[in-house]
Length: 623
Ligand code: ADP
Ligand code: MG
Image 1 (cartoon, rainbow, N blue to C red):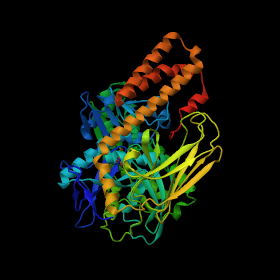
Image 2 (cartoon, rainbow, N blue to C red):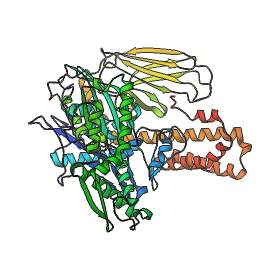
Image 3 (cartoon, rainbow, N blue to C red):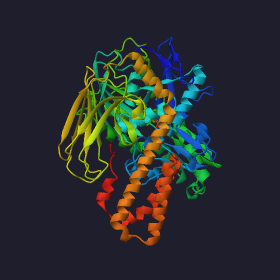
Image 4 (cartoon, rainbow, N blue to C red):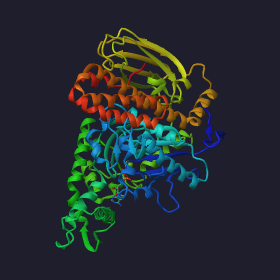
């Protein structure tokens, strides 16, 4: 494929444009490029010197959106309107989030179904994809301001443990922000690339990437073989990071230790602004102790003090927890610490001297820490972008598939199994289920393209899986696998796992498709990104509403006697409203009413626990 770039604003084709690398972080996000003259990756600094954009989005009552530091300042004042850590929700269902939802100060909608989570702010519903897209838009805007050119292509990083759905959600966020996402790469891979590890492509190495950020800890063990990164093991703790250090220090001061004055009573106060100030001061102290032996400051006139040694003692349990995770990761990879050839430090919290010392001692070697640990992931993403742009001749470019491959799901939506730019050979699989009781057949339609509706994509093949034994809707487990071999031949197979019925087919996706046609398909996906994603959201909301309606109807039929007349009337009224909203194609109203119907009917279901009914709500159905 030739080098053709697309100007998002005009839709015209440009000759050459820049590909940026983006670290879409839980706490902070950042954009980087490789300089054309020196070939060195650099983070794009804002004119005001701030290079990190806090991954926080604020919505005011009028629908205005602010991102980054200004949003961060509203965290305490308007917690229900200020969304942080949206990355933790990416590609997740309500059940995935589960008990973690208490971590969030804002409203995460839980209707007990297997649908993707949404965040409610006032009367509006936002998907994590949309929330992330606001952060990406902000980064894009800054980059365009600094570079004085349109930025439309990006490589975005994700944690190594992200699954398909989470990676797809990240891709969609990019697309929604007007970015052509050339590739999604793993954060530890990016960090290694930033240090040039794996770039020469001729040696084998085993790398440990230790990433301690604001709220998460990840350890990844990677093997590099001829320029290909393989994840051998990942481990970590999704609720462990620099924020926990701040909290420990805040509590230490609250309990009057280190203030040298027990009468000041910081501990008894429940004052919100004081709590906030404590936390801000604690973070400042922590950072100060990275380069100094003592911190001395004051909070509300109360002097506070802590030495580096005291702070190290305080956080020892946290560090120990990260080392336990390292041990487990090594065990999963069947390795000893001494077998690791290089250790890469990532994340702002690895600046803490006690953390660095502990990691060095654990692996028994020096660590890579010369690059700014906040920036290293974005820098590596920029290196990958440079490779994709064909500028890095030291790196061999592997064969990739130019267009996404997927199947049609409910409402005519495209469900991508192999995203475009995936290295081939590759394999992907996903489970689906039936929509109707006793459904004995399932049609699996295979499509290629980037649009959200299959009708806008290119149909490759159709597979009919027949002979599924009669089961209630939602019970069959149909596993669809895509195997794209090195010659670009796609083998699609479908197996109903409970009964073993299977069917398969082979196609050649690139057959009869010219480069120009591929480019046109890519261009179309960008020019239609916004409407496509809105349409997808509407189809998903409608599908979810329909499931809720079906379940309620089924329930009323079966257990009508278990509910009172008033309950029945309210339920039917709400169902009617919902049906009308579906006819009117009002996405927000559909979501609101589905949520309300769920609120009304949940108590009934709790009264009569019917597992078959619950099962009926599980899984994505095809057609
Ligand atoms: P994430 O990957 O979660 O987005 P980052 O890698 O940006 O997070 O790390 C943010 C964390 O790093 C915060 O807890 C911040 O307080 C901490 N941090 C930043 N600079 C320093 C420093 N100089 N010393 C200690 N901790 C730091
Ligand atoms: Mg990070």
